[in-house]
Every structure is written in C-alpha cells, then in structure tokens.
Image (tube, rainbow, N blue to C red; front, side, top):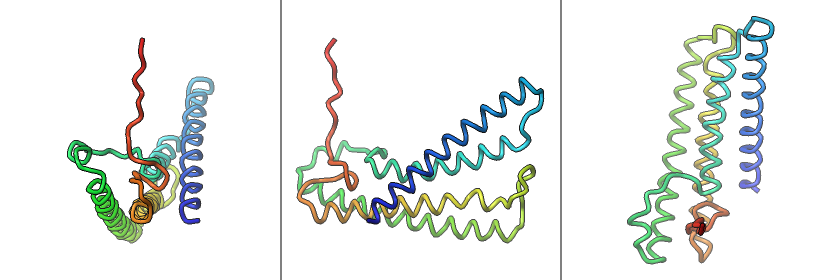
Length: 173
C-alpha cells in the first residue's frame, strides 16, 4: 500500500512537472516572438519545476532500479553475498536519504525565518525547496522497502519490483 502511494505520487509529480515546464517554456517563446513580451515569471517557474522534477526523479530512479551502481565487486560475489550486500546497501542508503530529509527540513526552516521572496512570483523562497525533503523521504522509503523485500524474498532485488541482472540488449547486424 505504501509502495503504491509513493509510485502514484512520483508519477503525478514528474508528469505535472514536465508538462508544466514544457507549457511554460512554449508560452514564453510564443510571447517573446509573437507578442514581443516574455512572461515575467517564466524563469522562476521553470526553476521551481526543475527542483520538483529532480527530487521526484531520485525516488523514481530508486523505484525502477535505475540508480547508479558500481558493480565490479558486487557482480564478482556469489549470490548469498550479493544478497547480504544489497540489504546493507539499501539500509545505508535509506538512512542517508532520511538524514538528508531531516537536514533539508532544517534548511527550509532557516530559509523561512529569513523571509526572502522570489522577485517575480512574490512567493517565499523556501516554498520551492519543499520538494527536497519530500523526494528524500520517498527515496528513503523506497530503499527501506527494497531492504525488506530482499530480506523476505529468496531472489535479489534492486528495488521492490526489479530483480537484479542485466538486460541483454546486444543486437546482431
């Protein structure tokens, strides 16, 4: 149930962020070249959306096993050792993501106390960084669920739904 809720949240955040960024950029280009007037808030809105997409994207990458792996040593290990290592990696990464979530909340509290606002949109600067703790928390939850999945299942999982292994993408010409 938690996994499904996180997946839907990621999908909405990423889809909305990319679509809004495209709409904003296209509208700004049309305004600039057709009406000789840019949207005054376009750059700030795209900055907000980039932060949203970045931090929703780290959770999405963890969910689909698309995170960066340095697997030279890992791949050389026998299956039982790989499983143990995957559990350890998942737990440590989850702890780090939850720690980053905590520190990002602390940073947002500090920003909020300063009272700065964005020049064009006149919204508080701290609002654009709200996505960071959300993304770190969802990523931490994803890695924690991956550790649990590896502890409960006989196979080795990179994420809750992705088994370890490499796709054979070689094609013969």
